[in-house]
Amino acid sequence: MNEIHRVCVRFHAAIELIGARWTGAILRALFTGHHRYAQIKAAVPGLSDTMLAERLRTLEAEEIVERRVIPTSPVQVEYHLTEKGLDLEKVMDAVKTWSHRWIPLPGDEEPVGASQGPAAAGER
Amino acid sequence: MNEIHRVCVRFHAAIELIGARWTGAILRALFTGHHRYAQIKAAVPGLSDTMLAERLRTLEAEEIVERRVIPTSPVQVEYHLTEKGLDLEKVMDAVKTWSHRWIPLPGDEEPVGASQGPAAAGER
Image (cartoon, rainbow over all chains, first blue to last red; front, side, top):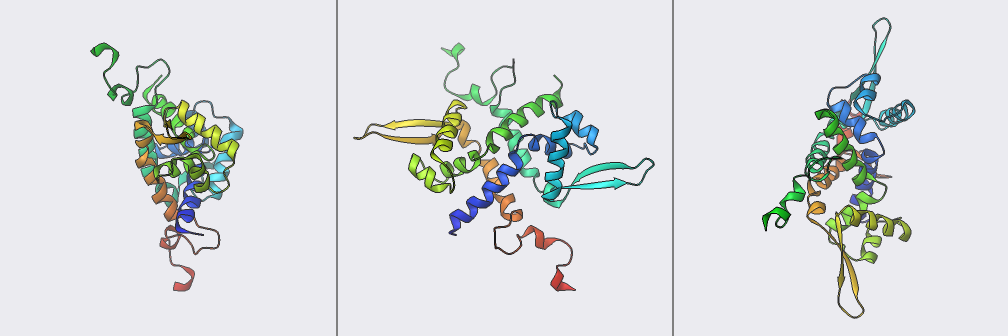
Protein backbone atom coordinates (compact mmCIF):
# COMPACT_ATOMS: atom_id res chain seq x y z
CA MET A 1 0.00 0.00 0.00
CA ASN A 2 1.67 3.26 -1.02
CA GLU A 3 1.65 6.38 1.15
CA ILE A 4 -1.11 8.17 -0.78
CA HIS A 5 -3.31 5.12 -0.58
CA ARG A 6 -2.63 4.77 3.16
CA VAL A 7 -3.62 8.37 3.83
CA CYS A 8 -6.64 7.93 1.63
CA VAL A 9 -7.88 4.82 3.42
CA ARG A 10 -7.68 6.51 6.82
CA PHE A 11 -9.17 9.77 5.64
CA HIS A 12 -12.00 7.95 3.91
CA ALA A 13 -12.81 5.91 7.01
CA ALA A 14 -12.72 8.98 9.25
CA ILE A 15 -14.86 11.28 7.14
CA GLU A 16 -17.51 8.67 6.55
CA LEU A 17 -17.65 7.79 10.22
CA ILE A 18 -18.12 11.42 11.21
CA GLY A 19 -20.34 12.26 8.26
CA ALA A 20 -22.77 9.36 8.59
CA ARG A 21 -26.35 10.61 8.66
CA TRP A 22 -27.06 12.17 12.12
CA THR A 23 -23.63 11.37 13.55
CA GLY A 24 -22.23 14.87 13.12
CA ALA A 25 -25.26 16.42 14.76
CA ILE A 26 -25.10 13.95 17.67
CA LEU A 27 -21.40 14.68 18.19
CA ARG A 28 -22.18 18.38 18.15
CA ALA A 29 -24.81 17.88 20.85
CA LEU A 30 -22.26 16.01 23.00
CA PHE A 31 -19.67 18.76 22.47
CA THR A 32 -22.18 21.39 23.57
CA GLY A 33 -22.87 19.65 26.88
CA HIS A 34 -25.82 17.39 26.19
CA HIS A 35 -25.06 14.08 27.87
CA ARG A 36 -28.36 12.36 28.56
CA TYR A 37 -30.30 10.51 25.91
CA ALA A 38 -33.33 12.81 26.10
CA GLN A 39 -31.11 15.91 25.98
CA ILE A 40 -29.28 14.69 22.90
CA LYS A 41 -32.54 13.85 21.20
CA ALA A 42 -33.96 17.29 21.98
CA ALA A 43 -30.81 18.96 20.63
CA VAL A 44 -31.09 17.27 17.24
CA PRO A 45 -34.40 18.15 15.57
CA GLY A 46 -35.81 15.30 13.49
CA LEU A 47 -33.73 12.55 15.07
CA SER A 48 -35.70 9.38 15.85
CA ASP A 49 -35.19 7.13 18.87
CA THR A 50 -34.18 4.21 16.67
CA MET A 51 -31.54 6.24 14.88
CA LEU A 52 -30.16 7.86 18.04
CA ALA A 53 -29.83 4.49 19.77
CA GLU A 54 -28.13 2.99 16.73
CA ARG A 55 -25.70 5.88 16.31
CA LEU A 56 -24.79 5.87 20.00
CA ARG A 57 -24.03 2.15 19.74
CA THR A 58 -21.79 2.76 16.73
CA LEU A 59 -20.00 5.65 18.45
CA GLU A 60 -19.46 3.48 21.52
CA ALA A 61 -18.11 0.64 19.37
CA GLU A 62 -15.73 3.13 17.73
CA GLU A 63 -14.64 4.30 21.20
CA ILE A 64 -15.64 7.87 20.40
CA VAL A 65 -18.39 7.89 23.02
CA GLU A 66 -18.41 6.28 26.45
CA ARG A 67 -21.63 5.21 28.15
CA ARG A 68 -21.63 5.96 31.87
CA VAL A 69 -24.15 4.58 34.32
CA ILE A 70 -24.62 6.99 37.20
CA PRO A 71 -25.59 5.04 40.38
CA THR A 72 -28.46 7.28 41.42
CA SER A 73 -31.89 5.88 42.15
CA PRO A 74 -33.19 5.33 39.56
CA VAL A 75 -29.89 4.97 37.72
CA GLN A 76 -29.10 7.54 35.07
CA VAL A 77 -27.20 6.94 31.88
CA GLU A 78 -24.92 9.56 30.38
CA TYR A 79 -22.95 9.63 27.16
CA HIS A 80 -19.57 11.32 27.17
CA LEU A 81 -16.89 11.86 24.56
CA THR A 82 -13.74 9.82 25.08
CA GLU A 83 -10.25 11.21 24.39
CA LYS A 84 -10.66 10.04 20.79
CA GLY A 85 -14.02 11.81 20.60
CA LEU A 86 -12.80 15.02 22.23
CA ASP A 87 -9.96 15.09 19.74
CA LEU A 88 -12.57 15.72 17.02
CA GLU A 89 -13.00 19.27 18.29
CA LYS A 90 -10.91 20.84 15.52
CA VAL A 91 -12.89 18.95 12.88
CA MET A 92 -16.16 20.12 14.42
CA ASP A 93 -14.94 23.72 14.63
CA ALA A 94 -13.75 23.70 11.03
CA VAL A 95 -17.09 22.35 9.81
CA LYS A 96 -18.96 24.93 11.87
CA THR A 97 -16.89 27.80 10.46
CA TRP A 98 -17.32 26.59 6.88
CA SER A 99 -21.04 25.97 7.26
CA HIS A 100 -21.56 29.40 8.76
CA ARG A 101 -19.90 30.94 5.74
CA TRP A 102 -21.42 28.83 3.01
CA ILE A 103 -24.65 27.10 3.99
CA PRO A 104 -27.70 29.37 3.75
CA LEU A 105 -30.58 28.94 6.14
CA PRO A 106 -34.06 28.52 4.67
CA GLY A 107 -35.50 32.01 4.30
CA ASP A 108 -32.24 33.72 5.25
CA GLU A 109 -30.16 36.26 3.39
CA GLU A 110 -27.28 34.87 1.34
CA PRO A 111 -24.52 33.47 3.57
CA VAL A 112 -21.38 35.57 4.08
CA GLY A 113 -19.29 33.70 1.52
CA ALA A 114 -21.76 34.27 -1.28
CA SER A 115 -21.73 38.03 -0.76
CA GLN A 116 -17.95 38.20 -1.12
CA GLY A 117 -17.98 37.33 -4.80
CA PRO A 118 -17.79 39.86 -7.66
CA ALA A 119 -20.03 42.95 -7.47
CA ALA A 120 -23.40 42.22 -5.91
CA ALA A 121 -26.46 43.17 -7.97
CA GLY A 122 -27.00 46.44 -6.09
CA GLU A 123 -23.49 47.71 -6.72
CA ARG A 124 -23.57 48.58 -10.39
CA MET B 1 -35.67 29.37 15.00
CA ASN B 2 -33.34 29.87 17.97
CA GLU B 3 -29.59 30.33 17.67
CA ILE B 4 -28.67 26.77 18.67
CA HIS B 5 -31.12 25.37 16.16
CA ARG B 6 -29.77 27.67 13.43
CA VAL B 7 -26.19 26.58 14.03
CA CYS B 8 -27.34 22.99 14.17
CA VAL B 9 -29.20 23.11 10.86
CA ARG B 10 -26.17 24.54 9.05
CA PHE B 11 -23.69 22.24 10.71
CA HIS B 12 -25.85 19.22 9.99
CA ALA B 13 -26.20 20.13 6.32
CA ALA B 14 -22.47 20.74 5.96
CA ILE B 15 -21.21 17.61 7.64
CA GLU B 16 -23.59 15.36 5.76
CA LEU B 17 -22.70 16.96 2.47
CA ILE B 18 -18.98 16.44 3.06
CA GLY B 19 -19.40 13.08 4.74
CA ALA B 20 -21.64 11.47 2.11
CA ARG B 21 -20.21 8.14 1.00
CA TRP B 22 -17.20 8.77 -1.34
CA THR B 23 -17.55 12.57 -1.27
CA GLY B 24 -14.75 13.13 1.24
CA ALA B 25 -12.39 10.92 -0.75
CA ILE B 26 -13.29 12.68 -4.01
CA LEU B 27 -12.69 16.09 -2.43
CA ARG B 28 -9.36 14.86 -1.14
CA ALA B 29 -8.37 13.76 -4.66
CA LEU B 30 -9.28 17.23 -5.98
CA PHE B 31 -7.27 18.91 -3.22
CA THR B 32 -4.24 16.80 -4.06
CA GLY B 33 -4.24 17.87 -7.70
CA HIS B 34 -6.32 15.26 -9.49
CA HIS B 35 -8.57 17.12 -11.90
CA ARG B 36 -9.53 14.73 -14.66
CA TYR B 37 -12.22 12.12 -14.29
CA ALA B 38 -9.85 9.17 -14.78
CA GLN B 39 -7.31 10.66 -12.34
CA ILE B 40 -9.92 11.13 -9.65
CA LYS B 41 -11.20 7.60 -10.16
CA ALA B 42 -7.67 6.20 -9.91
CA ALA B 43 -7.05 8.18 -6.72
CA VAL B 44 -10.05 6.70 -4.92
CA PRO B 45 -9.77 2.91 -4.74
CA GLY B 46 -13.13 1.15 -4.98
CA LEU B 47 -15.03 4.09 -6.48
CA SER B 48 -17.33 3.11 -9.36
CA ASP B 49 -18.02 5.19 -12.46
CA THR B 50 -21.69 5.56 -11.56
CA MET B 51 -20.89 6.85 -8.09
CA LEU B 52 -18.13 9.20 -9.23
CA ALA B 53 -20.38 10.74 -11.90
CA GLU B 54 -23.22 11.15 -9.40
CA ARG B 55 -21.02 12.71 -6.74
CA LEU B 56 -19.44 15.12 -9.21
CA ARG B 57 -22.92 16.22 -10.29
CA THR B 58 -23.92 16.81 -6.66
CA LEU B 59 -20.73 18.73 -5.93
CA GLU B 60 -21.32 20.86 -9.04
CA ALA B 61 -24.91 21.53 -7.98
CA GLU B 62 -23.63 22.58 -4.54
CA GLU B 63 -21.10 24.88 -6.25
CA ILE B 64 -18.20 23.14 -4.53
CA VAL B 65 -16.79 21.83 -7.80
CA GLU B 66 -16.67 23.54 -11.18
CA ARG B 67 -16.60 21.55 -14.42
CA ARG B 68 -14.26 23.07 -17.00
CA VAL B 69 -14.20 22.09 -20.64
CA ILE B 70 -10.70 22.59 -22.05
CA PRO B 71 -10.94 23.40 -25.79
CA THR B 72 -8.25 20.98 -26.93
CA SER B 73 -8.89 18.43 -29.66
CA PRO B 74 -10.46 16.24 -28.47
CA VAL B 75 -11.88 18.42 -25.70
CA GLN B 76 -10.84 17.60 -22.16
CA VAL B 77 -12.95 17.98 -19.08
CA GLU B 78 -11.48 18.99 -15.73
CA TYR B 79 -13.02 19.33 -12.32
CA HIS B 80 -11.77 22.10 -10.08
CA LEU B 81 -12.68 23.27 -6.60
CA THR B 82 -14.52 26.58 -6.47
CA GLU B 83 -13.87 29.19 -3.77
CA LYS B 84 -16.50 27.42 -1.65
CA GLY B 85 -14.74 24.10 -2.24
CA LEU B 86 -11.24 25.45 -1.57
CA ASP B 87 -12.54 26.89 1.69
CA LEU B 88 -13.00 23.29 2.90
CA GLU B 89 -9.23 22.96 3.26
CA LYS B 90 -9.26 23.40 7.05
CA VAL B 91 -11.96 20.76 7.39
CA MET B 92 -9.97 18.35 5.23
CA ASP B 93 -6.77 19.02 7.17
CA ALA B 94 -8.50 18.52 10.52
CA VAL B 95 -9.99 15.21 9.37
CA LYS B 96 -6.62 14.07 8.04
CA THR B 97 -4.87 14.91 11.33
CA TRP B 98 -7.52 13.14 13.39
CA SER B 99 -7.61 10.09 11.15
CA HIS B 100 -3.84 9.79 11.24
CA ARG B 101 -3.96 9.74 15.01
CA TRP B 102 -6.94 7.48 15.54
CA ILE B 103 -7.78 5.29 12.56
CA PRO B 104 -5.66 2.16 12.36
CA LEU B 105 -4.74 0.68 9.01
CA PRO B 106 -5.50 -2.99 8.40
CA GLY B 107 -2.46 -4.94 9.57
CA ASP B 108 -0.76 -1.87 11.06
CA GLU B 109 0.49 -1.20 14.54
CA GLU B 110 -1.87 0.65 16.85
CA PRO B 111 -2.33 4.28 15.78
CA VAL B 112 -0.46 6.97 17.74
CA GLY B 113 -3.46 8.03 19.81
CA ALA B 114 -4.10 4.55 21.15
CA SER B 115 -0.53 4.25 22.42
CA GLN B 116 -0.85 7.42 24.48
CA GLY B 117 -3.32 5.94 26.90
CA PRO B 118 -2.45 4.41 30.26
CA ALA B 119 0.51 2.00 30.39
CA ALA B 120 0.76 -0.19 27.32
CA ALA B 121 0.85 -3.93 27.95
CA GLY B 122 4.63 -4.14 27.60
CA GLU B 123 5.28 -1.46 30.22
CA ARG B 124 4.31 -3.26 33.39
